[in-house]
Image 1 (cartoon, rainbow over the protein chains, first blue to last red):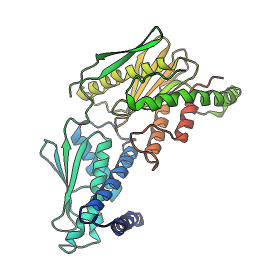
Image 2: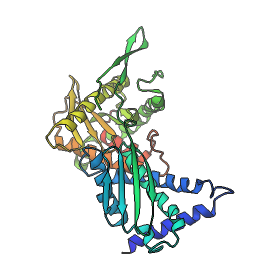
Image 3: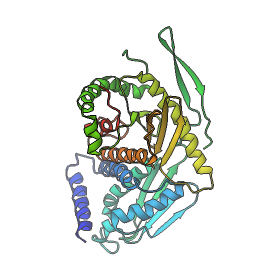
Image 4: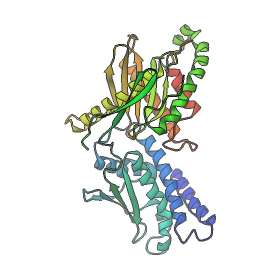
Length: 190
Length: 187
């Protein structure tokens, strides 16, 4: 379908655009990869807001990862993730045996060294999506033989959960002045 | 209205200043609209029910809070603030309950003597809180739900706006207009 090609070609141009406009030394120290990843982050945040608008509430982290593997991946890349593995301790591995952004490149080991550039945006996409759903994570990708690739997400536990103690400011008008009283409200068990 | 120290946190100081300015605009626009009250009803737009609408981030600071200018704004800020506790209670209760209740709409949070507070939490942990007048008996659940849907849709649009950085206060005029259309206009 033509709409698949649209994103693909735009993505390729984006990568080459970032590298062309890279300043001295940026290519070596990985700034370009970071730029692409940050782009993906912002896009992921907006996308996930749109996609989860009509879905039911997610029960837990695994539910969110399943959503990413099925609905999110299908909407962006027109196919699902082929394999999701987890150690239930916060590490998830998403395996895509025929990653759309790499299929046009090669069918084996050719151009392997350039693969990381084309995966950075997608890593950011996943990270942005998770971040907007309340999960702080680090997403990396690895390719051993194109076009199969693996995305590994490491969740950082307890960073974005609602804080255990919420101190409320209680304002009271006394002599026309506002005083702050703190008292711990509901203590949530995470 | 003197600038009061924020009851949220330092980030929200901006939003408080905003809401101090907003009433001036709201009142001005309101006077034009309410003169044609019956025409409004005939036009079948969204019901103007809300007295206060707030959008709260997942870190529990307000992105956007707007209330009818006539009343003491602080009261509404405080009401929305305390309703956050109820929202969290409901969410954690839902998570623990065996009943598979997966709706985004949270329904009535708590009623006070004058007002009723409704809540809605998105999957991205953004909370919408709406305060309506208790005396408004023509209120139906469907209408509240549809108002929240509209809010959610507008929020999604704001999120996709390249000039909006996630985490900032919402300054989009389109969002403002949509909220104005839902709030009670007072001349």
